[in-house]
Image (cartoon, rainbow, N blue to C red):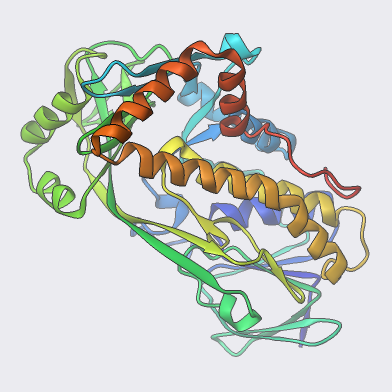
Length: 408
């Protein structure tokens, strides 16, 4: 049987960043089991994923400290978020946030998932990491002192710790006694890139419409051979399944007309759009982050609604905290250490899940008293500095969390 210290199940962006952090900072040997072949170009593997994500300020700091040169991506596509406008279509409720008011150079950075995945891989040495792809885990068996991982090929690995980073559809967590609850939102995210008449000036928008939350993130993409020059956005439009079906059936011109109607003319005319993709939304949460000789991270632990862009940022805080716990230990699967990790992550995890879920349910509702209440809340948030600071701390990743002697 093959021997290693840690097996990571899942070769997506979370698993790849985790492998880099563990090999670089802990000295443990790592096996990364990737279900997708790196040579695939079918749009599924992270190196080919067309989605765009907003990295919160703390996430940018942590990735930079881990040796991922995000400034390389910034030179190609700045994508900084310096100003955020939150509004409710047809109502007066509005909140304006500017990074200078919070002593930040930016709230975060917008990057394409494929570019980030490639960048992490380029700056991850193979020393200490065994990458197996394509392969999937058939079974996990645990004893008092180790875990035995059997791959679909029949290959077996014995490890001290198994980390599951294989996404919200992971079927392995039940094998290790961790359960997951799923709450469908009955919503679909429609994603595309657009070019606008006016420059974005590093401003992002979160607009709540009768059709659903609509996010515009500053991101200069290439559409029909023309690259945006400071006037591009990545759009995430959350709508009902029926509305999504109708939107995806429209011509580009018809789709842009509906998008313009809901977004307004804050950026002038929206004059170009890329291909559109969509995916259903639900909240998936495990009842625990750990079990005997196993840990679950990223979307496998919690899959969030894209509102406020918290999913990957929460996952990276999982990673950083876990690596911090494992930096000065002999047995990475020690149960007391895993329990301490779970306790350390509990507050931040619960607060972030509550924030995104509350925003979804509050701003995807047309019940009149609730509409009045949420607009009053937006107006209050805009004029009360202490509330603004609390909101910004949570969404940028700097909210207080439990500290332990192992935490980084």
